[in-house]
Image (cartoon, rainbow, N blue to C red; front, side, top):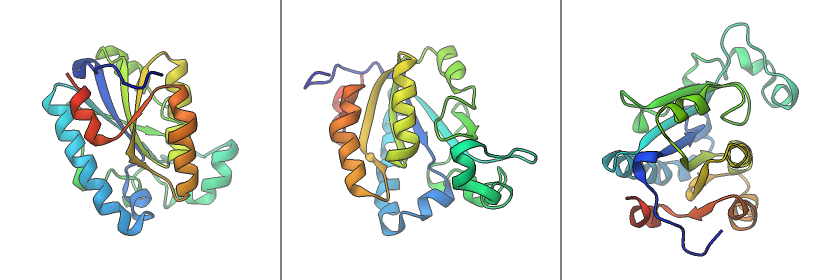
Length: 194
């Protein structure tokens, strides 16, 4: 990717907020409040310029069971903590979706494989994903890889991604993600959105 990212056509972009749900945010402790402040400002900025906002949350409905590596991580909590109706799987109220936003529920780490997110984005003419999520090494990494394969332009907001392992977060945003897209901060986003 180039050193100077190209301008972003806001009307063809979606801010993709992944796993910004109560149970995940609470794991961040004191770091959650400033992160959510930046998310709130970014949502407002994207909406004011005509962009889409898309929310992805993980949760399991009655009868759904995680499989593969997800089963090892979630296990029996799929019927309690990670149940689709549990408080912990709901989007944090401070950044709650509005009418017209995309909201999908996933049962895998990545946002595309178990949802109709790609179809909803394409139907709205979205070709650019502005990505934010918890955790950098989980949903964000999966979304970057899959989104790149689906031919989206990717813009990762490094200061709206978080991980319980700061060194891993840094390695991904500095060394891996720039191979698939642009990595910027929220302060840079306003200059690029048109």
